[in-house]
Length: 294
Length: 263
Image 1 (cartoon, rainbow over the protein chains, first blue to last red):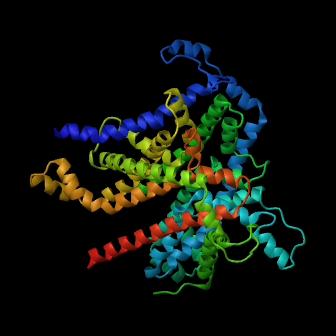
Image 2: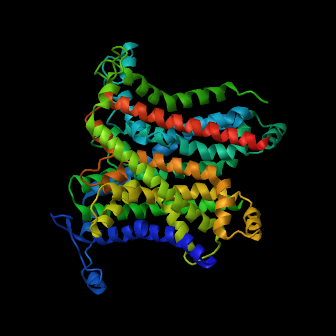
Image 3: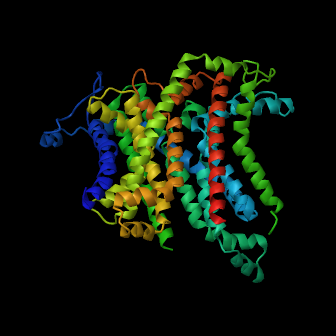
């Protein structure tokens, strides 16, 4: 076997795999988002044959998209996904930063153990970690039982099936994604810079605000994107912890598909979700590249 | 060596409590005698026993493990090839698209990946079930494998490979005799990561499965929707124990290896 052929196989096999099973399916989603809904299996009427491109442009059917624009459920769910993802990202940062900071300050010999303790929950099932919060937050859950036992409340506080539960779920599930990049930047930070700041008259606190925080910006940005981007399209957390009035776009897509069996509308929702995600993803890559160059 | 300030100790204690108490409660209450999940009624292992007699769960567990092993293995091969292509083969036509397709699935919402794969399988008229889930899992796992293995390849001295080739190896022999043994820890951890990703996946499996192929997360999800049950707690504790034990073991082994290399 020739050298060139070997190299070509190493490239082509994974390349073709991704072309067929990752890229081509998006083309199909796009195509079906322009199709008509029909109650059949599969529940849509194909708009055109693969062979007839001209016919496609003649009959291009934006019906599903105008439908999305007219029904305010979709608008609201896009906006509320962005809102929920943004608030959760902020809370994750506020919890994650002190932890990453303390880890970076910890004695060198216990740092690997601390790091593993952060990563370990990430390896255990996501679904199970979300499920664990149902028992904690529900009306007869551990928090309400404890508060009633302590005599702080008489009536259980409703926590499950609210936006609050969704915030808790996202923060809990994505905390390691925030801590890891933060820890990476804080750990390699030059301690002498802070010493210098203190020599020049900064207090511990002002040295943090003037030196540590600005220098850890790349970690903050990376961590925030790593939480914000996947949180927008989240399905499991709003479905299991959120209430009926917590609408997020991942949940809408799921119910259009599985409950209403409306494949074309589900596809149109997916296309718009992708368009919304492109902005933060491109920004993220831009920041990553700039960070690598420095 | 400096000591941690009280503020830092508080941050770490509260943080780790937040991360671990939910899982601990889940495990503790899986040994609860009472059917009321949140009220302690005495120690019992009966939920584990009832789990072992539940046909639906056992079937789902068997399907899930087979999918995880098959998909992780194929994904490791394909992902390692992709990493070699990206790190070692320099510029080739379509490289930008290729690396884009490796990174995109990592940030793609699962609902979109699942929906698009399902529509592909429908368009190709494939019967959905075990193999369609496996294909889907290979596709996203190979991207994770490729990221893990490429980062190892980046920190690897190419001259070792070149020396092997100078000594008469062809590239395939050089890969199996020199490169693979050195990057093996990364390849193994990539394989383990693929296994856990596959065991854990609910959304993509729900889209791409067909009648007869129900995975464990799908089974857990459909009973969780009906409420918390001690049996699910037992099942979750088993999975947490299995994966947690495996990860701790793997990290101990790799740390021994590192300290051996240093001596």
